Length: 444
Image (cartoon, rainbow, N blue to C red; front, side):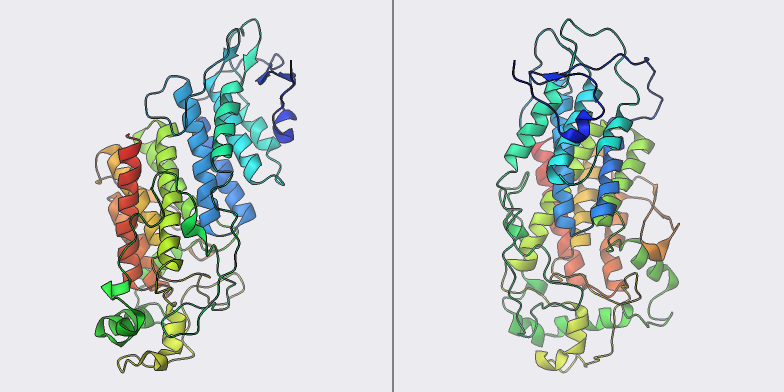
């Protein structure tokens, strides 16, 4: 028979031959799995560790999360869990024994290794196998063909999804339009055209242009635009006084940031909060994390469609405040020295390298809260949230609902000085629509 091996990182920790898509493990002492060890959460933590290590924009990271968790979800369904498969259930082969967790482990590590082939996931796979199957295998041994099959289905499904389109972005110096602000070239400018996971297209829930205006010139001259700019100019300044931005607002701004490489980034923070809620309330973690991951991945696609694929690629507040003489609005006053509160590890104040509208944090938050409240059948859940932003070390914040956390997440971007309230409001709205689409298609 043809030998089919797992990726090298996996094979290092499997001691038998991979024959015909199966793996026969060498005998190991049977150990009871300790209470609380969840293979879905384990691999979610591996994912977050990878986010910290590789960095990059939330677009790429959210896609990876959806691929991994959806492969694990289809594996779980292949072992009898109820639900609508994302791609398909994979049938077991006769005469082999199967362990659900081992197959989910293989699905996860195979997908991750396909996305980041230069990373070694061997130790992660070994850790997942600390508690091997208990019992005697069938005549042909233990098989991981189901996990391999779901991983292969996912990898093939995303092979030509548009995520590798690296065509450069041509910035404009026209008033109102985004241009790089010193934090890097435009990140993921073509992501709005990536094939979604549940949406029909990135534009399915495209919001109106900022403020509901039909063109940039009308927007810039309006009093509504001036109010947006002047609010973030006051509340989001690096030098704002305590009477402008409170200490609690400053803490919240940093708490939700996680923009820097070395943190688990905005999608990772929401994955961590999902872990907290799942431990607190219980869940079918394979399904819950798949829903959250899918919603955040599609939120990124929808959000980046709004950022780059409309007639207004809205400039960031630092540009708007430094150059408002070009906006023909007497209610905005130039201040070239203004800087946002947002700060990198070298003490440099910055804005993320992509247009402002809509807010990525807000659309992720809206999608996350939308899934959580629909999955649990209530929004009124009190939980303690955590962060990894270096400016909010060891800070926790308590929320009494998923929506309250999402609203603060979105609003925090004004206090951080990198977004307008328009960006926050539209992001929350589109994120919730994405969540509704996801959970309507793949019910809880």
